[in-house]
Image (cartoon, rainbow, N blue to C red):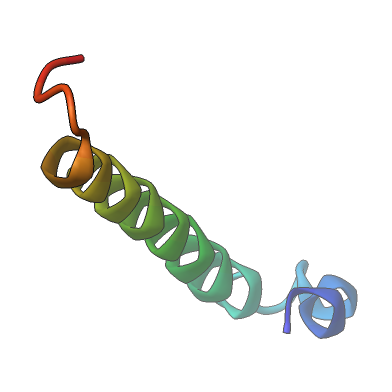
Length: 47
């Protein structure tokens, strides 16, 4: 979607903004999920 939106950035920048925001939120979500799983599954119980 981001590649397709490149040619329309000057006319409709939101075509690239929303997919980019959603990619960033998905990345943040996976990072937080990984941190939470590490905290729960860490056998030592401390960082």
